[in-house]
Image (cartoon, rainbow, N blue to C red; front, side, top):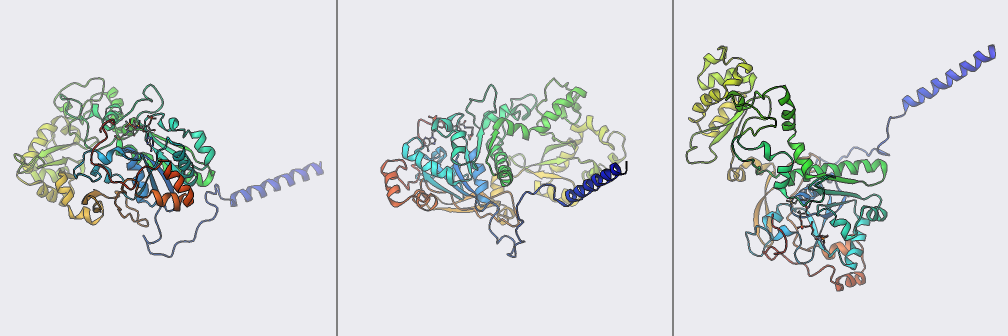
Length: 478
Ligand code: CAO
């Protein structure tokens, strides 16, 4: 009996010891050794993605948006382009004859360009070396194109198990996965077009490139997440962003409203106040706010001649009393038809009509200043001209002037994501094949003899070569 008790006691002690040991151990060790805190000033200790090499097989807009962001964060982005023509956008919407288009230059900053015929034997020899050297391959070819080139996931992974392969496609797996997709196709298939525009008008696409640039942004997040996971697992993975999914993610509030329809009419939509019944799908809501605070676009002084003399006005509940005083309706602060948000919902057309009488007496900037002084949220409708000339956007580097050897100075949008310790500088886009020699020798370490062989085969084409200014006829224009 005593012996049994002794055994039990020892067991319990052992358990306690193990427990104490486990408590001391960190739950998950992600990085082997944390580096020392840098003593260099902020913004002077390299870039967030320094050391990351990207094999950039992207073209048109969605893929290039993604790799441009990664380049701004310091990744070495090597853009592989077809000899002769390169990325089709070099020659699309050309405004300066003989120079790369703004379409191309504004999506391919901070990258290096190598020309390579990926379908030739020597081209594949270079590609193999690129795959073995780079961390990430990014592509947005039509479905199956990468496989047809011979670059299957299995082959890439056998050459470089750490390689992350990131793709934009129009649709995810399913009935449409083989389809080629451009921006507006994605806006329509992702729910944006059916919910944009006026209730009694056509579905509308928006000028913001939510299908292309939006999906490129999503893909960039997938890539940095995969790079982070690779620190722990040591292996690469596939990252897929379908444009339909990316657009739907941005239309999340409309899927919210689709489900709310079951509970009754959408009371914040203007159509509710107009007694127009709702159908079984979310209607187009014109300029109604997508959130819980009613808002619309109102005319400002000069609207008769200036197409952008308008302001977005939000009747945010906490500042309702200030709005009443501002527009000269102090009685509305206590009147039962106007004092509380639910009472206002069926009267939004009348209320905004009254506010508009006031906004029409001021310019959009006067409305902006007067409202913001009272914490009333409003948004002036800024034209692209006004944005291009806005000094504060120049100061933050959101709008930048870039110099280019064949087109001269032009404006571009800089990195919209600001990191305090990884400052983005915007460098001009590369000429077609501008860095072919430097990449073959310095990055891929081919010998002079090997480079001569590769070039003699025609795999790199003629370079460096600026765009012709003409779009190749066989390719579809976006
Ligand atoms: N060397 C040799 N061949 C090359 C090459 C190179 N360096 N780079 C590309 N090619 C080949 C591809 O292998 C492909 O050949 P196959 O069709 O014989 O396999 C061919 O060029 C054309 O590629 P593509 O089909 O991607 O190009 P496209 O102009 O016909 O289609 C697009 C363009 C955008 C519709 C299609 O790429 C697509 O659907 N991509 C996915 C969705 C996407 O990103 N859309 C956004 C576009 S931006 O609005």
